[in-house]
Length: 338
Image 1 (cartoon, helix red, strand yellow):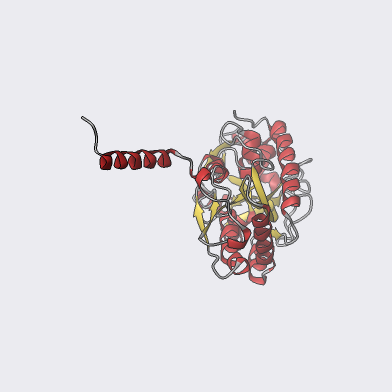
Image 2 (tube, helix red, strand yellow):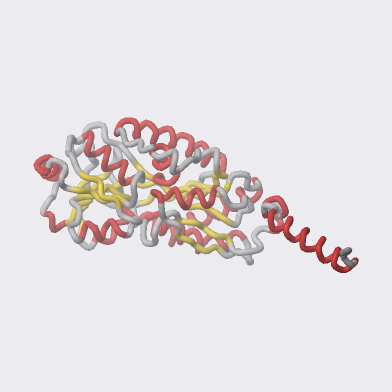
């Protein structure tokens, strides 16, 4: 039976609609223009559960960057934990490069994960994202429950050797900075310990307080509240110089762990291919936010040294250098897990 002209037209429209639904959105959408940006909400993806150091940095920037971007700008934080923080990074890497999906990632996300688990984190941090800004750098802290009665690094090492690996240490996930930092400590100090990963940085202090584990090496910002109220004890920091917020706490090298040096950082990036004008606008907004006295003070008090001078270009070079450094540390510890 021959179809009527009306039926043929309806059929063509339906077929055209099917083709449109099968076309990737990136192919049919117009590229973002700096003059139009931002015209809708910007999502800041944090690849960890709420309450950790990276989450704090992401929320502070999301609150303060909006006014610098314009009267229509609004930034919201979305937590996407999983796969040692690689899940959130992969989500942003595959997003449309229009400036509306950003990542605030740590050394775990953009250093350790791709170095130690390239199958789970199959990206190059410097080449597979659009760098925006370095938010800050910070020392890690070796922390124990105060109730453990351990007061020095030497006492912790003696306890671990006596336990012959039965005592555990907590991290915020397999293949993250805490995992690598504690693995390096265990190797250099000849102090065997069992890795017990938790989901997100906020779970680590709780595990310590319950004495489910004996120690952690984590961003000081993630445990600074419990350190200051006396529930947790900071035994040492991981950098070669003392942390200015805790000047009486020795470095691990000062405490007898020769050759130990490690630090962490927080960086903002977007998907690869973001327009240069938008990356520059985000960089200016991030640096202005980091210069805000409230943001600067809160980051400093949490153990992070804020940066206000990075550019997209210097951020890319920073990521290149840090990725190479973490590859070397991973090889030293033998922690590669693919």
